[in-house]
Structure formats: structure tokens, C-alpha cells
Image (cartoon, rainbow over all chains, first blue to last red; front, side):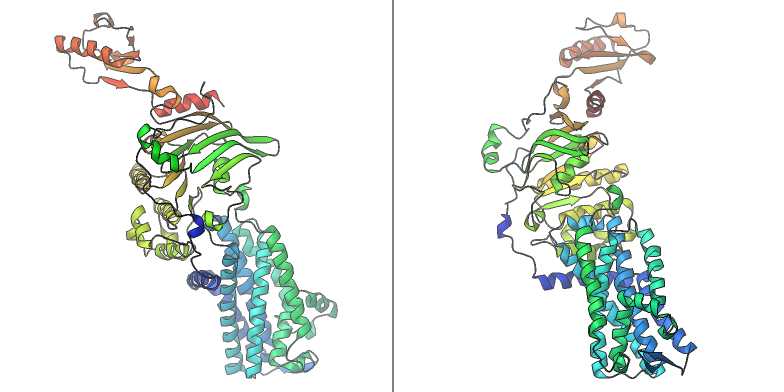
Length: 278
Length: 325
């Protein structure tokens, strides 16, 4: 090269940020949601499984009632919020963990690290995907319960359930990022997370009504994040299960505490590069 | 080799280009770079300078410290010693503004699952302050025909071209290409070379690592060879490792009935090789060829396989890296 440089160098300082924070996140979320929409595995796990499960459970005990929070509720009023909690775990934790570990393994996270995009924008994009898919699946579950199985739905119930869904999805998103540091490969992420969530679902009364579970198991479940979310969602629809309080403060605080813990661990252990390269 | 790891005279550092050079600081400056992993020192004090607008090829066997060096320059690894300046900043602490000026093509490449090529480029374009139009990036790497194909359905070579397009989408000043053509068929490699040559035409600075000597020879303005954590040679493709002053091998097949004794008077004796081929090794090929061809014309010998051969870059490279490992 003996020619003089052709390109005029723009000083870094004069280069403005491309977009504001909000539009950058929505830019990222747009592509993440598009990828989610085309991902058959994600669609089946996050959307189809909860719907099928709800249909099976409410059909099985059709017309029956169950005791929850000391009161008797319709079967749909029990299973809709419980399966909704499970669906939020699926969309927030399971799907995201597999996606993030997969992106890390393929080097796709590292490649994004080589761009000026701040890491929190990528995390916010993922969280948005979890929140949107959670809202979608919870809406479908509530619609099934209400149209087919006599779930009583009111405006305040819907509003609060939506807020709780957003909180729950964000919390499980944080937990997913925390766990991503512990999982080596995308291949092991799926089985590992399924295996660890299944017993939690059982002791949280997701599949079996919790009045048949021993108290000590429920005590454990109450400090894990799944049952408190289910209890809070149930209170949104049937306040009587929470002593007449629609807004279940304590369970929600437990859920949020898990989110904060997840975030702290995620910030400390999250890695961009594939584990194998060390 | 005797050549120390000192800054090298660049081919462009001529009187004519001197004025332009003077106002353009080096894009990359490295002094006494060291990288240790526990007790093992992978990079043992290297110096290098890459000037604006040049293609710099960084060669070395696996495990020589090449990847460690490149990842330090890219800001992916934190060095254990020495000074590093890339576009005027320390890559270990540089922020998003610096990232926007640097394009990186990683060795491992993977599709952005579920998105099309165009969508993937649009997504990355959104990360940069002054991105290239997506169509332009596609055009640069020759991937326009696949724009609406899904990333995870591209062939290996197309995927590498997408990687290249992703590295270019932010319109960077400096581009790191880590073994960009590994696994390519010859046609795809030449296409990739054209892309890299185009980048230089655009005034970009390119830092290239490769295992292919012909790649370095075809593209690089400057070559540096690392072995066992140290720079063992540096120079232009023409001069590296004493190549410019090394002897030329002149070889041809003896005509029927002619022996080495019948050859004209040459400054050095010809060596007979298998199959009737003879080789003459000399650092002044012109007089030798003159004597030889005059003799052949007089006797009507066609000497159809006459060649004058300089040591290839590969021969120089193998010699240098063997010595140091």
C-alpha cells in the first residue's frame, strides 16, 4: 500500500449513539420474537404443552372442586393459575436457558460481544421475548378456563394477573441467566432444567392439587419461586384463597427475591464465550 | 533467523507516502506483549505495528500464541504484560465507541438460528452508529442471492461470508479476520481473497491470521511469523525470512544424449536430480540464464521445462517455524 489512506476517519467521539435505549431494546426484541415465532421447539414447549396439560387436567376433574387456601374453588380456578405459573417458568426459564446456552455454545454471544451493543440490551431483548410469550400463553390459558370451564374472570383479576405474569417472566429470565453459568452445553441444558423443574412442579401443586400434599413439602415449595407465583395468580382470580386479598404481597415478594438473587448470580457468573474454550 | 523482533520497515514507508503516513498513526501498536496461562507463557514479549490501510498477515503454527495475541487485540482476553494500542485505545478497557470501529470475524462461526441472512444483518446493523446498508454488505461478500435464505441453512462457505458481512456491517476501520478461509474450496478461497482485496481498496486496515501461505502472499502488505510465543520473522511477502536475497533455483531436464559435462561454463556446477533433471542454485539468476539459453539456442534444445524458482513463502515458513519449535 503506497497510496494515501482513502477513508476519512471519523473520530469516535463524534459518532452518535444509533438509537435510544428503548428503541435499541425494541429493535433487539423484534428479532428475538421473530426467531421465537419460527422456533418449533420453543413454540411447542412454551405454548402447546401448557395448553394440552390444562385441557387434560380440567377435563379429568370436570365439574369438580378442590380446596385451595382454605376455601373450595372450581377445578378451573385452581388449574388455570397453576398451569399459568408453569407456563411462565417454561417461557422464562426453560426456553431462555436453552436459547442462551445455545447462543453461547455456537459463538453467537461472543460475536455480539464484538459489537458495540451493550449486554443489557441483549438481556432485555430476551426478557421481552419471555414476557411477551408468557402474556400470550397466560391469556390463552385464561381464555380456555373462562370459555370452556367456567373460570370467573373480572377486570381487576385480568389486570393483576397480567402484572404478575410480567413480574414472573422477568424473574425466571434472571434465574435462567444465573443458571446459564452452570450449564456447559446446550444439549445438557434441556434435560437438566426439565429434571430440576419437574419435582418443583409436583411439590408446588401444579399437577396434583396441593391439599393432598404433605405440609412439609408445601413449606419447601413456599420458599421456591414456582408455588408463590401460582398462589399469587390464584389470588388474582379468587381472592378468597388468599384471605380475601387479591394482591398476594408475601408470595410475590418471594418471587421477586428469587429474581434479585438470580440477577446477582447472573452478573457474577455470566460468560459470553463457549465453556469449552476455557 | 537472525532478524530480531524489531519494528519492521513497511513497504509503504517510502518517501512519496511519507507525508501521508506522518499524519496517520499506526492502527495497531504492540510492545513487549506477554500472555501467561498459569506457568505457561504463550506469548513471550512480541512487538508489532500495523499501519493504516494495510493488510497485515499474522502466521504461525497452532499453539504458537497466535490466537492469544489476536484475542488480546480484539479485547476478548486480558494480557498479562506489555503495551497494546488499537485505534488509539487499550482493547482491554475500550468501550462501545471503540467496538463500533472494529469488525471481527471469529474462527468459530454459527448461524443466528431462525433468522434470514438479511434479518440477521439488519439486526446487527442496529447495533452500530453508522452501519453500511444491508444490501451493500451483502454485495461486498457476494451473498445477495442468499439474502432471504435462513442463516442456519447456508453452506459452510456461505456462512463464513455471512460472518464477514456481519463484521463489515458496522463499517469498521479495522477488521480482524481469524483464518477466514479455513475449509474453503479453491474457488471460494479466491472469492474471499477478492473481498479482502476490496476491503483494502476501501481504505480498511485488515489484520489476518491464516495457515495458508499463498493467502498471505496474495493479500498481505506485511507478514509476521510467530513461533513458540515469539516473532521469528517479519517483512513483506517478497522479503520475509531473507527471501529477497535467497538463491534462485534454475532447473530443466537435460535433452536426450546430453550430460552435465556438456553444459556451458556456469558459475556453479549443476546438480543432477532424478529423471534427468538438473538444478543450478545461484543468487544471480540472470547471467546463468543468459549463458544457459544462449547455449540451448546454439544447439537447438527447446528446454521446455526450464524454470527459475525462488523459495516459496511456504518453504521459508516451514524452515522458520521448525527451527523455533
